[in-house]
Length: 398
Image (cartoon, rainbow, N blue to C red; front, side, top):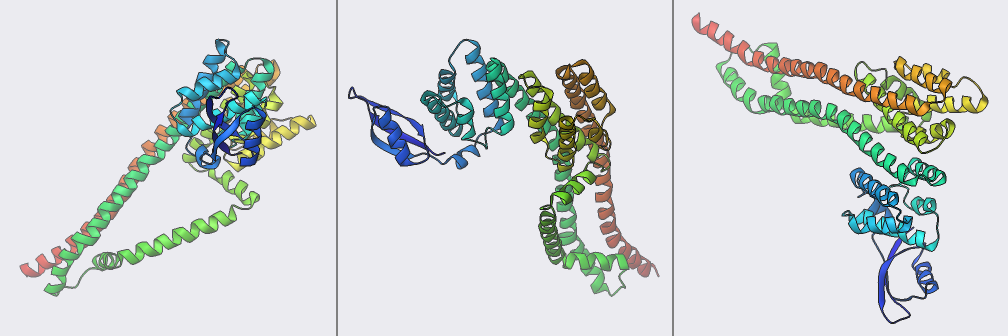
């Protein structure tokens, strides 16, 4: 729902400024009139969809920590949001908090206020907050959410950093090779051509690549473009997406890293759900949204269905290739002892270390491979230059 900033006249003659959230401008005016306010100026603020895209994870984490701190000191929920709005530097989030505050004053439930902004507050987040509100430990739920956001952001950063350096190395290598092909090779080979010597095959191949480099890159770019377009069309089918994601986690080295990352996100979600007062079944259905891998989502969804049917819920999980044995053992242990929260706490600690170890292994293997590949290309260019030079020297000596 859109937000409307207003300036209104109070019954005592003074003016008041604020933000009201309603479905339309007319509804906003009616809401102000119902509060004995006379609207003097009313205009829609930046639209919610545009605003929510500017809310960063760090800002949201800080908001939850502030709310937890205010509530722990006995501050009312609406007052906690008002104080948080005043201290928030992110203007987009400030407007959202202001809208939530307005909704709470109107008497709307916190869940209803949060559901106005689904991009910022996903169903999982709202479920955790509701669980905390129902159990009387809302301040703890906000603290758990802040911890969860910080941990997942840190894990995501580690995984992305594993990919950023190889991408940089690939780009840097491409620039060097392209420079050699465009600027160095043509100048030297022109001298060989004018001398009239027969150029070796490798030199001819490199000269062809050099003179048609832009065409080759254009063809390659078009192939990548249409390949991505075809891939996206194939991924419209859920079955194809599940099959692809299944093969994805089976990739050597990288697959293990992705699997650990996905399981760590899921385990963090389960831990925070359980700590917020939800039972295992409720936590599982909420935590499913943490998966970005369709195959894992499908397997754990089957596990949830088996719980409802009274069957062995571990069977679909055990079928996941390369799933850590400790992950299965700790869940089974938690099921037998009724201490799922402690089990998932240990799982999170284990997976966090596993991600770091696998990230280091991935980089230690990928870097030498990329350097070797770059060296091969450079060696071919050098051979394309040196081979005719050696032929020319032999002719001179004769």
